[in-house]
Length: 445
Image (tube, rainbow, N blue to C red):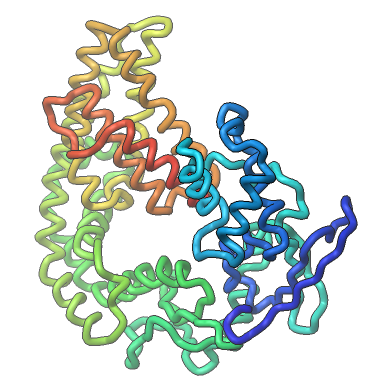
């Protein structure tokens, strides 16, 4: 069942065949409305087999706690004859942990290693019923057909509501949810189109929640156009500041970047809650009043940051050799990650405010690393798992996800805690917390 629609299931027993196991016929316009969690449970008759396969996918040291696997799997099926709202891996992990006292996490299973017939086979059909593709990976289908599916869903669900070329907020309020095709809930949201905004209908609630704040922001930027031009013109940027910035990006960009940074601050939170013209206008008026003051604060912050960068760079050119040079190489990579073209306009406002502390911590670390390279090296090794997780997440296209951003800025706090504790790191930041961030990031992928 999917809303008021019922999607047909087919079963074929032929090991090795492309459609061995359970196949779900999916109309194109409902592709983005599918629930990956529900699909993971397959059908009740497969739960025990899938649970046994997941248990066998555990690392050997853990797997020995849950043998014989079929017995634990049957007990799990008896406890869950119907799917729960959580993923089968999460429920199975909690069940095994309770049953034996030996803790296992959902991320310890390797679903990709189990037999293909224990994953739902998805057969995607177009409006005429023609098969477009088959896959056991929902993300693969959405990557290839998600845009087309979204257009098909929007065309059916939002014929009256959808709009293009918006440069002011719509006169009618935008509801959080409307009835969609076949009774499947649909989620209206404003979508940034560059020089204008479109009102679109989404089948995926999370996608609508991610898109809407960006659409609201674009309309606010359009509505603040004159204030933005005025702020750029009036900022009293000193020649020295411009020269320091020229080593990162052109001096001409500095004024614009500072105002963009101010916009990040005045438009940082709550845009997703703006659903009517009155709330939009109230936020626009507040931003108009505070924009120049915020730009002045960003100018002062930029002057501090650029002065610290100028102090730090020569310190990273010390003649350390061999493995000890790796300490300074790590700091150079950290500096590139912080100070790069566009850092003023792209960095979240709350993170940018911490840059002076991060840079002061690097200066202290540089001095100490030259005196005692082995000690610095030992602390640096604690960072490597988190740096690798960030790199992998970026390669997977997760950079804009909240989980990636949380790990990225917590890592800067951990650096302060490890190398310059006297400057004060944010409360609660530790290697253990970052390990939890890594787990959350892997689940997001």
